[in-house]
Image (cartoon, rainbow, N blue to C red; front, top):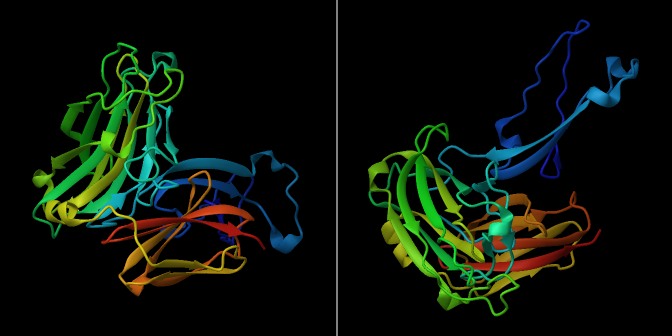
Length: 329
């Protein structure tokens, strides 16, 4: 199996009769946190290579989904700066027309919703699923986010943003908050997407006090109105309200990432030696790895990555920093 570019192999030993079945179980950590895509290929080296499968048409299956780690975090900020962060993914069953963009966010990248009537998405939620948030030791859980929206002189009803919470791993959700977005600006060219400035963004917070001492999955849905130009969601924070209020959104200084270009390893060093988390995505936002940088230091193994440009984001309690790295073997 290959999951998000990483290969995993499992062997089965035993006899399988004609039209029979066997089960091969992979370890839990094979499935990445957040969005993933996987390709499962079977039937190799049968009978130590003495037998060859003559029908390859049923040997492969491709799948994708969202992986959530139990009690993954007590606090996290999702900045969408160059890619989808770990522990968050999109549910596009109803609405596919929202995507990551690398600019126009409150800081850096963000999620953009296409809401013009021509997209035929009025009333269809585009969900961001987050989890699993661990509130067992938090007395004041909260979620906050930034949004920007422009009708673009289209005259349609405004979009809504809905927050829901699940206590049963996403089987059911309870709505805890809904707002109708207020216009925050106009596009410079009506034929183009509205690109909000930093000061355009509105900040909204939602108390999750009813979920104190629980572990939950959270849904943040952008729901287009009848028409408009574009809507943006950025910098979703989940955790203690006091923690969210005190966390800086400024860009980190004193970050060294070397060598760049790199072929085998990349060293990450933060000057203030604070603990941080490193997230590496490809240029399209697909998550490659998430790794802790204890004391602000870690080394990433990139030997198995294909050549190309990747986006490295380092996040700490102080702030964040995004760097592009060039992998060239």
